[in-house]
Amino acid sequence: MNRIFSGMQPTRLLHLGNYLGALRNWVALQDQYECIFCVVDLHALTLPQDAPTLTKNIRAVAAAYIAAGIDPDRNLIYNQSAVSGHSELAWIFSCHTPMGWLNRMTQFKEKAGKQKDMAALGLYAYPVLMAADILLYKATHVPVGEDQKQHLELARDIAGAFNRFYEKDVFPLPEPQILGEATRVMSLRDGTKKMSKSDESDYSRINLTDDADAIALKIRKAKTDPEPLPATLEELAKRAEADNLVTIYAALENISKQDALSRHAGATFSAFKADLCDLAVAKLSPITDKMNQLLGDPAELDRILRKGADKANEIAARTMAEVKDIVGLLRP
Ligand code: TYM
Image 1: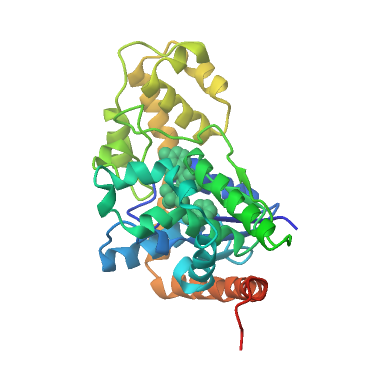
Image 2: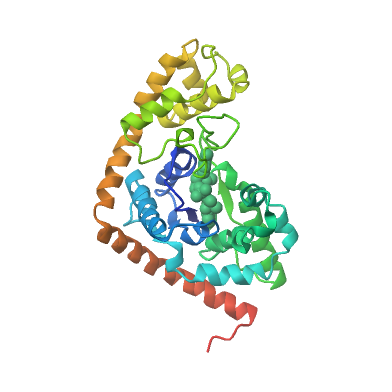
């Protein structure tokens, strides 16, 4: 059986990178797979959070999933902390994961900054929790952006190590699904940096909550170079910011990068940016409107999350019973 698991952290607001790199692909995949889409709130705790803002953001991420087109009646949508199996399985996995594997994780090195000794244990152990998220449901496929590739390789290593240690085929080795043209959307201010929730400049990203004026301003201010757009992808690849904007255009329009470039070859940036802005507003504003509408009824969102958590818990409880028996933990 093929089952998808994926999730997003409710840290700050979702941005265009989250949408084009992951969420949009989820919407297409829900027709082919049984899907579990989680708001990974325990992951958010790996960096300091303001409690009321975190609660708000958990609902906002759930609202974004639904607004983007995930049907809560056909897929499970819930928040991670509502299913205790995630933390339990993460502990068991952490006892089977050599620290050397975690030492290789580049995201820890980036997020921990210079003072590694002061970074939280949770930030270091984060990829183990991520492996538990996926394997708790024995998910076979995980649609994510390119930045999660290394974490998914670790999840496969952990699954393999567990299966070998207990000599049982308990967990599948989950396959990453890194799909579409925009697997790594870059900052609007610096084409060499990933678009990220944690960038201090809000001009570096388009948030799913931005209105048409904010989107227009951010695209207008996006860093570019003085030359018109080239005709070939080889030329484009030498210009990081231009490349990023064409990638975003292609992904939003659902065409190849080559087609997006052919449409605009020779155009000045002011003309291309005007087109990109119209496209971004046309594609994103229905999502923003729907999100705002959903956030107006938090009780209904909570009901959806509760229903999702109850169903997720049924699957999780089965895996945890199996794992506890295999490991030798008594279930009195
Ligand atoms: P997070 O919350 O940082 O991002 C959510 C999803 O968005 C993708 N993404 C991007 N894609 C393209 N360009 C970008 N600039 C960009 N920024 C983010 C991410 O690849 C991701 O798919 N560790 C995960 C959350 C997680 C998870 C999981 C994912 C926890 N457990 C289990 C899958 C399965 C994360 O921090 O994603």
